[in-house]
Length: 181
Length: 181
Image: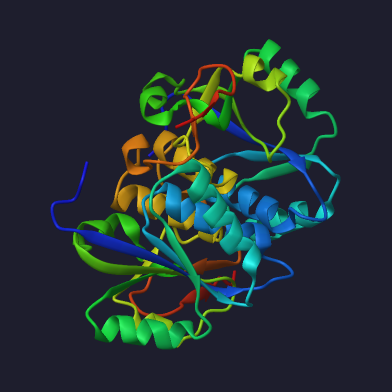
């Protein structure tokens, strides 16, 4: 299902730490891609590993997914906001996503910001929506997945054209199909 | 909302690696707790850190949540299955969760198994349900969150009684309430 008004979703990952967050950050970007975001922006420590993982998975499993590193994410977000983009900040301190999701724009540029433990206080004011996926501590990966699933819905194979491999759903085993052409 | 038939959900985390997975595994258990599981079982490398994190969060933020380490998870799962428990294996190779969720039991003992990269082949046969949250690579944390959210629904404050702190939802800041009693 396509949205009638085009929606472009960027996920912004704040505060990546090269020594502790490699897997979390990799999973975060893969979750963004699998649940329908168009782009992920890495910030915090400069680290090629997550970018390489995201590009490799996109190349193998198909679809369009852009990824980049941004050294000054707050400046980027201020400019994004000034140019009319809407900012969703996922935080356990925010308002309930069940109340907020119906109010979200169905088109235009959206940035979904997820942090690690320390997020600049400015972000709460800059964000158009501070949204909590439950007010319990859990995970930015969990929050992003549930939010995107509710916001743009599950993405099926049509969203991931091209690529060299695909998974065939199976009741009891692993079926990975290589595409030759 | 309570289920009329009592449902007890255990999340089993296979293949934890102490040197690489500390944060992923911590987040996985916190996600299990926040989205309504009753218990998490850690397997793979023995590691006190995630268990301490889960216990500390439960003590601070309330609710009932059990956690333990199990050195032989496949043996545990075989015994669980023999005693009538149902096993859900979350895997990108499984059948679509959108088709499967309505068929899942609404009561009784359920184990939700999530692996890392290498999962024993036996698990696909032992599981009553091999379920994919999309057939794209993403994250066991994302898969667990979306699955539990669809299966038992979002958990509100009533699910987390006791504890020493709670978050008050806010449109634009952090409000953490300490409970004195």
